[in-house]
Image (cartoon, rainbow, N blue to C red):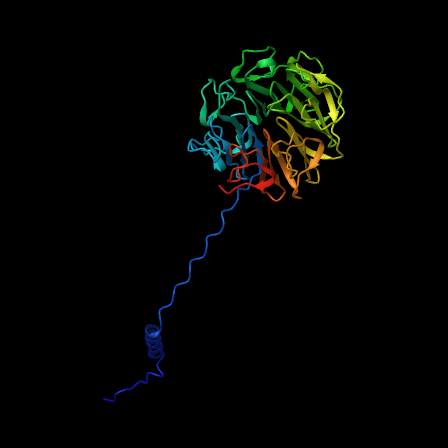
Length: 419
């Protein structure tokens, strides 16, 4: 029998085995190699928000996925997350200096931060509120505080938008009917009487159909579908813009023929600003901090008397503007080209002009050169979203309300910290 001899050099499997054996021998003889260091993890992405709202000392925003995030003071549960129990650096109350997700699976279409509480409307039109409820401002049928979103008692009513203020809340139904609840001091619920309050939504009287409503300190304002501005509640500082100093418990037309695209009532002081259909800004009410943006008002209102305007006064700025936001002692607006301007008090750097301490009578540009999509004014702080989707805040920061992950006030826009 003939024996077949096969050369290892010519057999492919044998050649492969020989090469493998050689490499193993070489590896064993070589000095040990230090394994490469693992790659550093990418930096945490900052939170991208589609909308934002600022309250007394906290702020909230919604992502494009309709998820709610809040930051700042949580002493009353206004962040909607019971896990926030520690104080921020330099603060005594529970707070978070970074955004925390509101503890719910609900998806929201709009959100509004007030003084110690927050309210929001789901994409299905249901209203929810959480936080302080001393005056029934959560609309839950009681005066019990809530650390998580709790549904507003409004059977059969679908809401489009909501506005949280100091001690009362208002919302617009998809039908255009306005509802308010909470404290009724001065008749700010618009239900035809003063005092009494309500722990559940009550329809504003007058059969008006609104495009938007905004709850203020002791007054409320709204814009009808026809663009007419109405206010109700106290008017001792001219904040209702209708000139009867006694105020009104029902909606009264603002003393102006201007067609408004929207108005905003200051949640912690007695003034109001609005944007007209052409992009002009008008303000009325108290002006002791120059928050109306006009520098030559001789009128005095209230007790003790203070500078004011009992009817709308045109802002000393060219514009045109897209939005205006007000809260306590300063105001801000976004022009149609995305430039941001603020005016009024700057004691904590809330104007974002790079300085602090001086008031600005007329609108001053926010430093940094960003193009802005929206601004939200809180109590001595401001937050905004740029056209690129980045969120920054500036001003007072004693409760972490800037959300920047650190203490100390800021005099110019500072990016929101990653959650």
